[in-house]
Length: 305
Image (cartoon, rainbow, N blue to C red; front, top):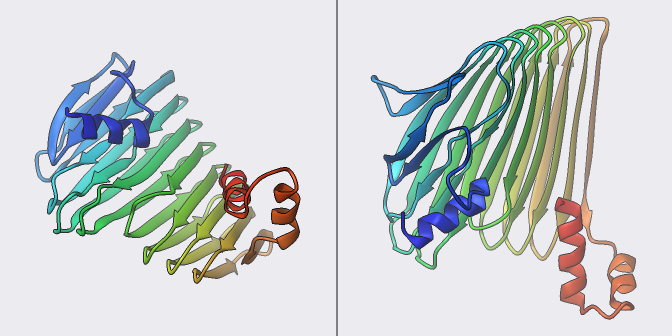
């Protein structure tokens, strides 16, 4: 891989050298390296673009890295990745996509990640999106995540997009069985004329299952963001969604919650807060020697940390 591709890998997957454990690198639509382990297998799909990641039951404290890099202007692809996570396992999955576009044609990566999480399994899923390049071509990312959580399982998702993506629609659909837990933490920053839409739908089907959706975002300049969250409480369950956003310049953010209780013991909460940076925060930092721009940057960085 060239220096641009290596930089993208560092940004989206924090990879500075070949990682330990299982991994699959995809560069400009082609496989660029793979490793499997005794407990984790990665198999190329035969009917469409993508891979199956198969994690054996009882696998503990292992990781899988599956980053995607596009550095060829004008490339558009759709990838299907399915994760089969065996019961009683405990693993970390690091995904993400970086696009460098130095040309005038759009570059786009669309991906559908489907998780089948077995009984009592625990998964930490990290997904970062990043764009770079000085070309006029758009950098577009449309990730879809489909989750089926088995009895007593736990999935924690950390998703980050803070630079360089012109347009994104991030769709997540989840179904939870008895005592399953889903935690999603999302961080987004947009600028220029960028557009970002988040669309969550969670069905709390199992008894004593729960979800916690937390979105933090910053909309700068003329960028636009939309946050939609739908939580359907279909059993005795707990559901919480939270959207906190900072507006700067001419930015726009819409938060659209929908919570539906279809069971007497469904407990559902939505919170939303959208506004500009408080003037007293900026003044306080400026008294410490920062410029106004530096103070704003400090506040934004702390908010998205």
